[in-house]
Length: 325
Ligand code: SF4
Image 1 (spheres, rainbow, N blue to C red):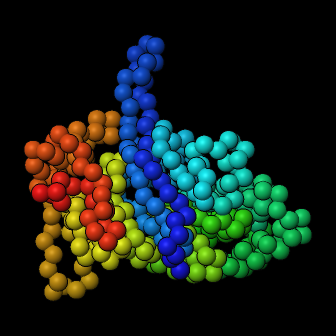
Image 2: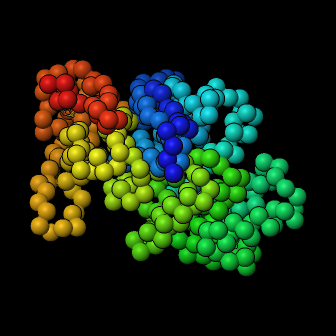
Image 3: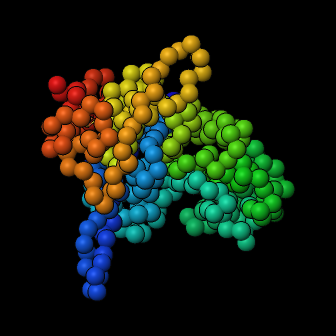
């Protein structure tokens, strides 16, 4: 259940990658993969982050866990700024913050059995003796809907959905508080997707988990999230409670994204907004509002001034000059 307590507070997070060129490999530019992103995740909630590929949503997740070192910003988790922790402190903190990856096949070592994959984090964090760890692995397999005999099998002997269950069991092994799930169902068949989403929901209830759920699929994000943030070109452009965002989107980019999602009711009319122009490169992010090159409502100010990401009322955040008009 979502509480009012904040578990994770991200402030002004930036992740820039230098571009080097010339004979001396000098820095000639930078890719602004995450460009000044701020948001909070409450204890027990699922915050979905949605956006097209390359919008910086995965880099945001990875920078929070410091799988990528952030360029700037703060990531406050239970009172500690993760960006300031030493390597050793961060390793210990990883027990609390786990990640579930998109491609379960790539993220599981093909030469390790499912049992040893799930046991590994317990060994890394020095939890339990060999017997206790075996018991824990058995319990985790059953929790994610697998059988104990699966412990002796290798990743290639499982289906995609089962492999993702192993990835989830591995993340759960150390009793984390926060799980960053990066496109956890996008590599799976649609029929399997909802089973894995339902499993994640059940586990959240049982283990009091908080999720940061990153995906490009708006329907998947709607299914699982309590609140949803929309990213475009490294920036968070809108964030609100799920139903509020899907029913009353403010930002022109969110409106365009949602207009492309099929509506279940054939009588419900929704005008499709076709965006023209390509997504600009994050190496050459437009001045002002990053969306101005494609926005159907662009004004002069949009080309000059970056709109502030601010609360438009009742926790519905948006960054758009239209809200100031
Ligand atoms: Fe469009 Fe301007 Fe709003 Fe950006 S700030 S989304 S360009 S209206």
